[in-house]
Image 1 (cartoon, rainbow, N blue to C red):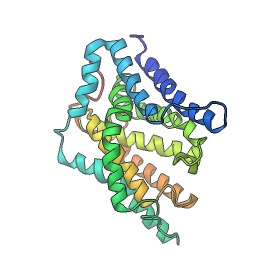
Image 2: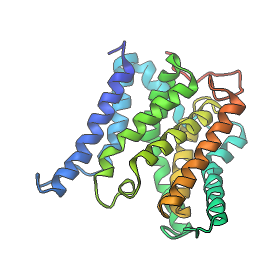
Image 3: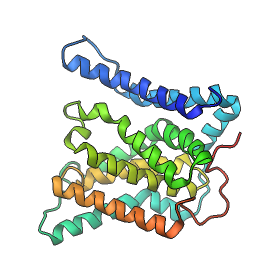
Image 4: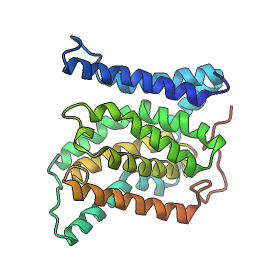
Length: 267
């Protein structure tokens, strides 16, 4: 297990979450009479990260994981990126849609107040579950072996595929979307996450803010559920932003900073 921490983590992450989600699907199809509450799919990610950290690096790995929650002393500009970058991309997508005659879906799925409430709820959830797992555990170890861009592509693909049971579950957000398009969006978002992560000394706190703000922005602006063309315009804008990031910072580290402490795992 010490030799293959990433394999251990990804196996556990998928196992713990998919037991919950496929159990729900089994109940919907009348195959079982109950299912584990959906929140445990996210708690399973935390368990996978903690178990993998302890099993492969002991308390040093666990301390590294938890220390990333409180890395808040970063340049103020990165707080701006975390809070507003996806909203900016969404607004650009809406303007492009308007230029070709599409109506905007702003506020259709949620009011501004509801989106803010969603952000406030999701931030602590993502901090201790998804971002602790994907960015806190997996990304630093991927960057020991691969460039920042390659690490982001691998993680984005596995992160996107992790959601697959939700595409089979009626009334989920993912069930409304084309799977390939969602996967492309997840990979683009993963690259943006790494860009932010590597510019903030590996801060899971900033990653969680970005994740929660991204979902709240998408919810309020309606850029992923406002119709097929809107969706693909938004994904296109995401990838244009990613191309600019790679061009400006380089694929090796996705940052111009020379101090890369915290971006990869060191015991």
